[in-house]
Length: 508
Image (cartoon, rainbow, N blue to C red; front, side):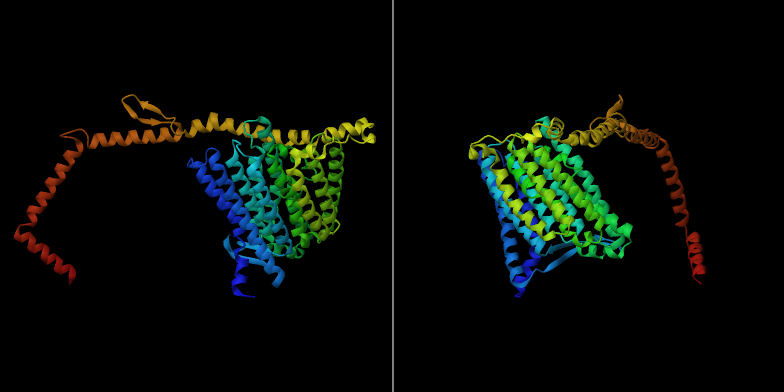
């Protein structure tokens, strides 16, 4: 292979970096007041679209080289941090799995960016939407192309932050902010599982590289299961499998383009990708694979029943999406990973189109949605359970979200009523002495510093600032008199000769 072409593989980092560059430029324009009014919208959309298209073009070029010369696999670009026992690197994985999903995601991302330019025209949060969308594109490409779990986790969290921002896009509406908080809190359980797995990998395997995880067979049965279960929890949460399914329907509160790329086509499949990436690790834990089959089957039943009673297009689509993703988990649990990958690609391509045309779906079909089947309508208990979505939403809100909100409220109250008073707040200081209005303090550290300042000022006043005849002046005059007496003695010849003789004695 031509060395110039081979070097193209090392430019893979530009795929997530280009959307991040668009985020930086558009954010700077907003902060500097350059992105206001309708006239600023085309540049914001054009920068985001150009960054997305640049990533797509680079992925296509790398795909062409991989088809001609073979996929290079793991590519290490540099050291990140670490110690003697483990190391984190900047590495990327260029194998058929990553290249396939990375290219598909780049294409979907570019199409959604182009679609959003017209869909969100004259929206108050136009620039904010494109900043969050570009941030998501950078994060999801890190997840798909990272060569190690730690770098993938960075992208994982970037996707979570951008999801939170876009669900709460209409921040002035309590429903939107509440749903964003719900989705953010429930996904933290999956993040905890991901972090647990990374910590165990660093401790037991000495790194985070995906290639290292194939060595998990060297571990004991218990350690092997713990490592796998951490990643499985992360995958179930990100792909909204039971018991984490409730957040997915609330996430539809965001704009339709974000619903399409996040929960219809790309991010909802991140957990499936993680399981496909960890196939060598999963096959060593058949009981965990059985757990994937059970979780996928239960989620599929849940999504199927709930989807039958939906009355709006987006809710019906999201339950259809959840049903298909559940089948992918079942396929992975049964060892049919190639089928799961093909299913993922086809489903993502089809579902993004459905979500993008969802606002016009009734116009396109020109017919009313079908009612639930008769067997479900006639079974009052089952119909109620499906209509209430098995009460999982309420259960998650009661057991997870409300305790988290209550804990945050208690911490805020502790900070406001105790910690702020103890340590003080900038700009909240009070004058301690009426005769010195410039000396202000607040909190225990501020008052302690003020007391030290008072003590130092009193010392200074006693020694230096009492005017003529002060203590410091008297001491200095007395010291000066002693020095002048000593100088006059040393100037006399006899004492000078004695000093010279004493010097020779010391030398000899």
